[in-house]
Length: 79
Image (cartoon, rainbow, N blue to C red; front, side):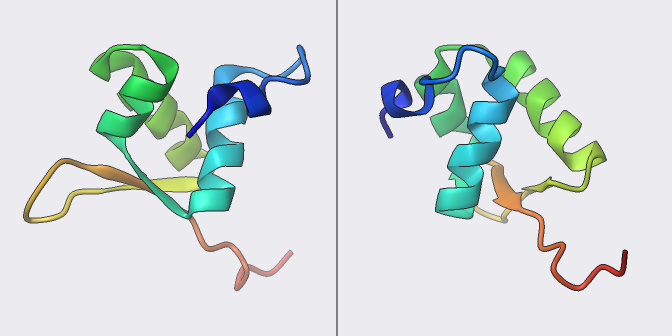
C-alpha cells in the first residue's frame, strides 16, 4: 500500500487515512499499519481503539498470527 496516494488533502489525519485504506481493503493487519505509517504498536493500537469506539472498525484476534483491523459493517444499523 502506498501512503502517498492518500495524502492529497492536508486536513486529513493519519486515522482518516487509515480508515480510507480500511474501507478499500476491508481488513488490514496491525503489523502492516505499523509499517505503512512507520509508527509503533502502541500508536497503532490507539488508532484502532479509536476506530473501534466509533464503530468504524473492529480489532480481530485470530487464533494464528497477529491481530487485524477489520471494517465494521454498519449497513444494518437503523438511523
